[in-house]
Image (cartoon, rainbow, N blue to C red):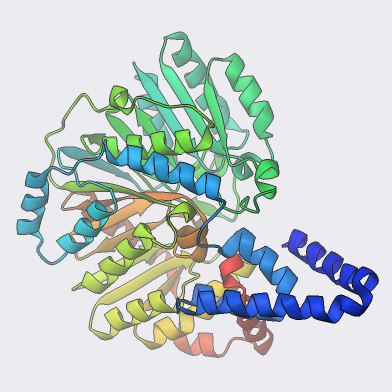
Length: 493
């Protein structure tokens, strides 16, 4: 945003100081271009585009810069072309087994439409996959490190945040030993997420150990494209193609409560074993190729070699800004909300919703569906927390129950519905996850982990405090004013 403000000031100075008598005409031209862009946006009635209409008309230069960094539906042509090419390659390795889909159709005719939409978007449905759910990050790391020690062929890891500490040191110790055992190790990290560690230094140091490292979307490089805001928020580990992890947990000590930030850090993750791991492997391979200039991988080398006799179905899914205007993950959540019959529960650190999602949630609640949402009481970003609170009112007025996690910060991103389906992954209920970040998750149906996640939600609810609609209405005037302003800028938060 600072860059946009500077460009706005520079442009105004140029208009006044250099153009002189033509300044009015130049500014009029900017306004005309603004109106043309607004007409292009107005066809999409989402609140995301409504925000950009206001900003572009009010601040032509400042608004343009913000829009090109945060709001565009399509990015630079070279990157978009590369993404499409990699996605098309990936689709050739993702074939849907018709018998698996037929089984689920017979079992769940009400919700199978969600699965069909994801299949259409290129995300197959798998069975023969066991699922283990971790209700806290420390249990996730215990299992993860144990599995990493047993790796024989390859280890793929993709994370948004990595930070120096006990988790990082233990991880690098394991990976460096595995390289010596001739295990192929690839580590994909987001440049913004390792900002305090220096991505170039990480690449150099780990390369000396034999670990292949790729830094996704280098910030300095992407400034020239105004695309540096599009980050890789995915979190995936794949071991030998047979074991896969995903969830909200990053590679830092706070995620295992080794250090304290914002009270107790409540996060979740899942472990897959069997056929469904291929979905996570394929997502990683696409992102790896996207982050590299010319490297082409033989995906078939990394297929699962075991099949697990386990109940239920899993469907790994991914999304990102290069998909826009299509958003498979947002559509998946919308379908789950509209298909819910008895209940749908959410845990999310960020409740920054557009009007359509709010309408869907409220409509579900009014129809008798028990809609509950748990958000943090202790926050990591005060301005996002203010927007969270501002969204409570309309939701509660329509019968949705809102709870705030009292012991600390809840970073878990879970959805559970009707004792049938659940989602665990990296997906927040906000604009960033739906429009600006590369995300991933797993939709699970009729797996035992559904009930494990439900039990964890109910236990978490017991240590959370329900927000009162009367108290929400009585919050201080200054707070209401700040929240109203921040809501306008919520697509940037």
